[in-house]
Amino acid sequence: MLLDGIHRIKARHHKDGHGHQHPHDGDGPVETRTRGTREIKVVRRVLDANEIMARANRRVFADHKIFVLNLMSSPGSGKTTTLEKTLRHLMQDFRCAVIVGDICTTQDAERLAASGAPVVQINTDEFGGDCHLAAHVIEKALDGLDLDAIDILIVENIGNLVCPAEFDIGEDKRTVILSVTEGEDKPLKYPLMFRECDAALLNKIDLLPYLDYDVKLVTANILQIHPDMPVFETSAKTEEGFASWLAWIRACAKEKLG
Image (cartoon, rainbow, N blue to C red; front, side):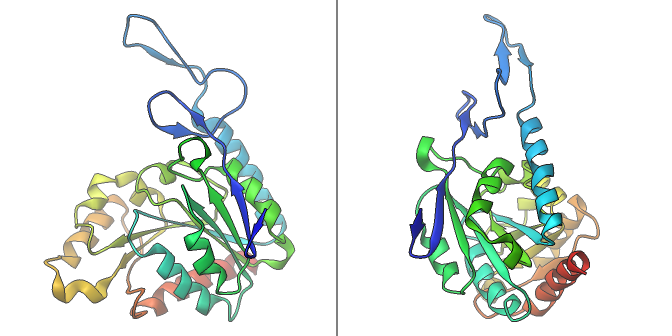
C-alpha cells in the first residue's frame, strides 16, 4: 500500500521458540528436540533458504546493474541522518532508492523520502518484530521499486549489531555505523558485524570534545576484528569526514555499474 508516496510492506517471519525470530525457511521443521535431554538436532539450517533467496536477489541486481549497500548499526548511531546526508550528495550523480527496515513506524522512511528518492518501508511488527531484514523480505520490497530506474539501492537495516550481520540479502557491500557514544569495546563484543562488513563509519565525532573516548583504541579494535577495513570518522550533523565516505561509495558503485 502507498503511504505519502512510501511503499509499505509487512514482513512475515517465523519464531523459533527461543524468543529470537527468523524468516520462515520453507516446509518442514527447523529443529527437533529430544524430550528429557539437552540435545537439539538441526534438521535444516535457518539460513539455508535465506542464502538461496540472497543469490536470487543478487542475480536480479546484476541484471539491472544496481549497486546495493546494506547499512547496519545499533539504534541511535545516526544511521538515518547519515543516510539523509549521503543521499543528498549521491543523487547528484546517481539514481538512488532506499529500503528501510523498522519494527514499527514509518518515521525514518518519511525523512528519507524528502530526498526525492523512492522509498520502501518494511515493518516487522506483525508477529512481534524481527530484529533484521532477510533476503525474502528484500525480494518482496523490490515489487515497490522501478529497478530499471535505480543505480544505487541502499538498505537501512533494523538497528541491531547482531542479527543483521547473519543474513545475506544479496547486497554488494556492507557498512556498519558505530557512534562515539557507544563505547570502544563494541567491535570486540559484536565481532561478527565488524568481520562481515566492508567498511565502518565512526559517527558523531562532533561530540568528541565532550566525551572521554579513545578513537585510536576503537579503531584498533575494529582492525583487530577486520584488518585493513576502511574506517571513516564522520559527523552526520556537520558532514565532517563525508568526503572520504562518499568517495568510497562512488568507487564501489562505479566498479559495478561500469
